[in-house]
Image 1: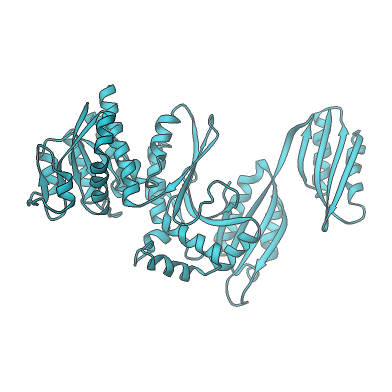
Image 2: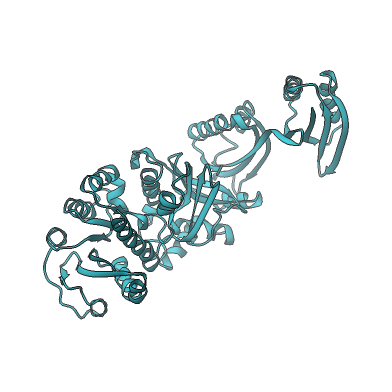
Length: 328
Length: 162
């Protein structure tokens, strides 16, 4: 049995979905030889701590008592092997995630996260800190939701030289552009529809101006292409000036307009994608094309967001940490 | 060595001769010409023997001088050299901001094969799709040139994913 004690920092949509997936997959995990115990769950307002393992079903049903302990104190003081950092990100400061991750790594705990902002702001620093402390920092869930792109590149494609990665990495903008192409509506109407379906935020600027895609490009550039790339190095163009005429014109010539992140090119912007190209995915799907020197082009598509789907990437990373620790 | 040129020609008198002249003039021995008409263009395949690569390069240079662009060149059945067709869309006041100059500047690096404009209202931004044929080794320069035009004329540029 490979055992691990987990601290879950952040009990919002993703935190709850992670706990729920962990609970639902308990017998599957036991069959695979993993014994995962959640010893603490933290929220802004307080925490639940139980060194013997929290009863996840009761936690999900709201039947456990929450204490007042602060997340940072729990990360420092509660004995655990892996910290899951699942708080929402602030792209300007990276907090509170940045502080949580630093504290966890400094305390010799492995970190698994879905939070982009700390990595966008200080990938090199966090990666260096993890190396220095001899622990793992796993970030699959930060890019492409459920799609296993980072681990695929770093593990299965390890012997390949990776030339570039192109990605449709934002479901909101892909939904809007797909709607424009399929129904001939203009940008504003497509955006309004996405908002009414809850696919776009009331303030959609982070998505439509391309910042979210650029953040993911920064992470891929650092984690996979090994460049020391910051957000300011990326040329970013959003989709708000893409007109209905442009989309129609593209269609007449066999193309669709997509918001594409070009990792080696350090660019984010609307691009023409041939209709029969593997990156042409519709609706809120994501697609990532990896150009390699041995394997050729590999394309991965799937749900780029969604709490349950993201949990798949988180749980995968947790198990990878345990496998790596056992192998070493 | 056996060479095949694949070309798209305008369906006007004298075009085929314009292709064949440089081949013969440089000692090429023409063995086959196939052409098929579709719309206003003719697809032509010219097969011939030449002595060596230097001769072939002279023929290709002569064709280029005559502004004849080959879609493909096959040598002994293998691709020797390839043109790329690149499309992009410009959104903005594409016609007002000297469309002739836009096309001329692109033509210095490649050949604009198609310009398709959508303009709902002359006062509003229009969208223009340009399709350009360019030598493989000039793709980077062409992309830089188009980015520069878009920046200076304040167009939104939608490039093709390469």
